[in-house]
Image (cartoon, rainbow, N blue to C red):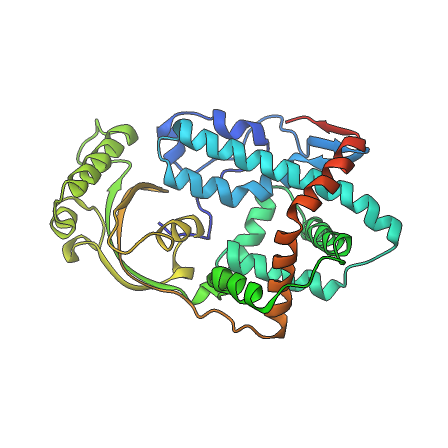
Length: 343
């Protein structure tokens, strides 16, 4: 298991096919690329004649899908509901971008290239644990070029700039509002590559060489039974020694001071957000199922409230203050736009 290098992310060529794949046995195996005829870059939606592609939607959904697939090994209604909500939010975000881009073009404004570069670096750091190789692999899976992704990032920044311009006359944030907002979000501003965790784990492989009759379903059932025993108060260390099938079993599944970049993105996102001492899982691993108990979590330091951070925090406060006003504004734009959603 490991959270950024998205080993679980499927080749998301067609957004609509993600939820209708084969059963659990196939889901545990490493995903295969589609064979035969595929839709290279289908249309997800159109806004005033401008196309939003399925590949754009797929790429934005990839980290969400990877984390949900890890968290819900059996998929099921909760997985489907959360993924459906995420998909709808992504499509709406892309639609709103296109609407606002039209107005931005009329102003003749531009976004400086160096700001786009900084934003892409931030996204790689936060979504892919700073691993640019994994980031580019995901671009390739979603059939997006780097230039295409730069365009998506520029469009996102245009939306932010236009929103700020639209409400430039909003009352300036008060010092106590800035401090409160900073205190609430400073953890999300940290360099997550400096996060470190100590945890115990129990690993149950999807296939058992000693039991040819074992399937991914029966192995998951074993992991679920162990989760129940842990919930009933059984000792994690003893259960790990008796049942875990990895190199850490003899030490009770203990892994000490593991840096976040050494874990996959989706796995890290789950366990670093958990409370110390709680039992997490079973989580879907590329080779099986895992139960985790965080022992100690040390997060990277948050940046100080310097000028650059303060400007960003002030912008967040303004957006909160004007959120209702903005929603009325964008809703009026949506009503006048020609929108055709196809997924």
